[in-house]
Amino acid sequence: MSAITKIAGRGIPLRGNDIDTDRIIPARFLCCVTFDGLGEHAFADDRSQLKAAGGLHPFSDPVYAGATVLVVGSNFGCGSSREHAPQSLQKWGVRAVIGESFAEIFFNNNIAMGIPCVSLSAADIDCLQGVIEANPELTVVIDLEANTVIIADSSFAMMMPEAARQMFVRGQWDATGQLLANLTRIRLHAAQIPYLNKFL
Image (cartoon, rainbow, N blue to C red; front, top):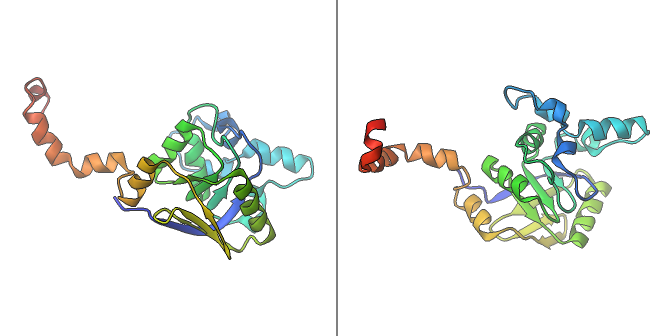
């Protein structure tokens, strides 16, 4: 398990509030056995609808190819609790999400995958998205230890629940990894519990 204290990468701005998990990854793509390949279907319906209307979704825009920091509005990831939503974003290449606010289950699913979701004010989100749109080559830096988001000469004070922030900074975000790393201790402790002995 490794600590995640700083993430740096080019940004991809996705404007709009209340973008739910059905839009992030449509239901027809949930019949997969593994999460592999989900990235190419992220925002599939939004992308095709915009294309039909003569527009271009950020996830289809070549200027954002290779971007790793997604910048969104408020209540991002609302709707169903499907784990496929953060999985599709990660498979697309997203390593961190900056937004005004996040749906709780979506937020926790991202933590379990090692993807920090940090919050800025609505005004700061609008400013950050504008800066990225004006210059997609700029690097966005999320510093979890300093609680700041930096791009070019601009710095924004970020918010994140302290317990979640500490999980990343201390390398404790991977619950499964922690269990596997402490398997010997777990077995020793379980052996001292009488009703568990028959299962060991």
